[in-house]
Length: 101
Image (cartoon, rainbow, N blue to C red):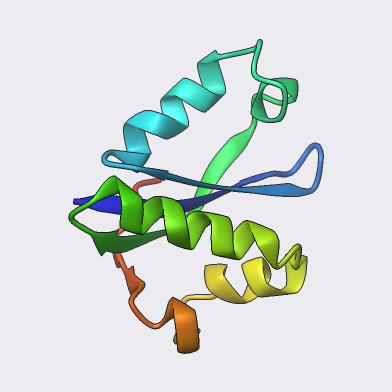
């Protein structure tokens, strides 16, 4: 199963959207990789939302790119709200209710 995940850094006040088979492990990689151009700048990333996407990397990659192409912080802020219900192209996203703290 592949997931779309959204992480947030308080220090930079930025969101990052990615996809992974294990978003919790991927968060640990973001936190430990100081060389990464985007997430390596800060070490305070926290998981804000996780969505089941599908069985293939292609499905997850397609949706991740769609979200990023919107260039919309507002959309990402909506996605992290627990009561937001995705529609349209994002309708296939299924929120994972238990985000580990």
